[in-house]
Image (cartoon, rainbow, N blue to C red):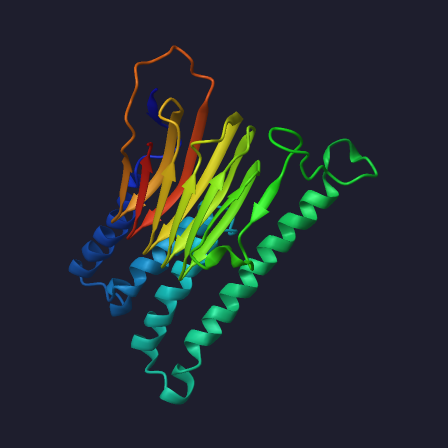
Length: 266
């Protein structure tokens, strides 16, 4: 088993850009140029992270949009002295906007999957015929999977979003292709110990003030491309002796902010 780091630098690029920008603004201030005080306020950290994350994901990242709303809320609150009559509507309004964004992103993906199945045939794409056959897809959005219970699913791709809740899933697919797992003020545990990988499997992980635990076989190879900012990313698997096989490679990408990503095996 081996672990490689590619397509990501553990957050050094993002952190470096933020530090560089702060340094440049401080230099400009020392030169006597007037710089607005809100640029150095703490909400701007979340705004900057949100903008960088959105730009890296073609402005289709719920994590980046959440960071932008979170920082923007406190920035407006501190700088504009919003009256209480309006301030009390900002939080529910922001949640409504975030919900609409997530729904719009989901609908765009569903429409693209429906209209762009390979070959342009008149029949829709397969939804799965059992373990390792066809392609199956499961989503936790809008179902009972966010109640903290445990469930097993036979799916080739997963789309799990934990927002202020906990999710536990066991994947049984023998042709697992990856998907997306996000935890915002929540936690997610994905058990892949009984699954098998397809070629070029990619799992995107987005965490903010939460945690994601991945349980997977110790012989899988990992290619890590995760950006972590004030967060921890740990691979705690027990490494067996190498068997010389390197065809089971899972690429993990995404962003972890003020949270944790833990990878373990039994």
